Length: 305
Image (cartoon, rainbow, N blue to C red; front, top):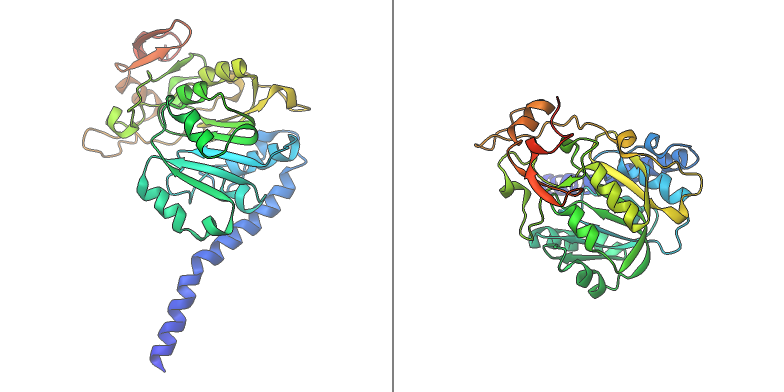
């Protein structure tokens, strides 16, 4: 009798994560209906599976941008428990491709019930600008798709610049608020770049919001939103803007409030924005306006006066 009770209790406990996920999704469906008719995507934030409010902004955009082919690509997903496209997969029933550089993460995704219950492909690869187009083609991703999400903590600018085989209608890209709203800069391209190894602080990575906005314009995209956390921007193909308002990077920029600077021993220091920036000011950035690599301290518009 006691053994049966223990088994029933364990079964209920094992079912809890799935029940919690279903509650999350149900609340997300309610939120999605509420934000679809708004006038400002930046006010549509909510999160079901995204790190911050990206789920809400994405729901607003897919409700207001015509999507002919509901397919997404997201890279830098880790184990896909927290991601920008999982709600698109479960709520909107999109299909897609996710890529991560960790074999362990990809194996986790393939064991997740979401993998058999959805039309999802998971690819193990360390992404570079040299291999990204081949990775997409190999997985049957080409031409017009709904959404591309780029978050690889390093070569984001260079990889997006290299992509030429797809035409996503919406692009979500991580930016580094540490580099300010004005300078067009990125960490120099290194095909082996790993954020944790590039500098002990773990805040030296990626590109500025102005760099990504300039790249987007060259590719035919317009900046339409940014999340309030200060780390993700949203672009829409310029021929599909409709009533969406185009923003300047200075309008969309938000100084990130999260304090993730680590010292040489791997401990969080909780430094403020200016202190963090001073501690990495000797590191190099690629100035995309001049084409030169220079120290952060020597590039106008990054360090506060």
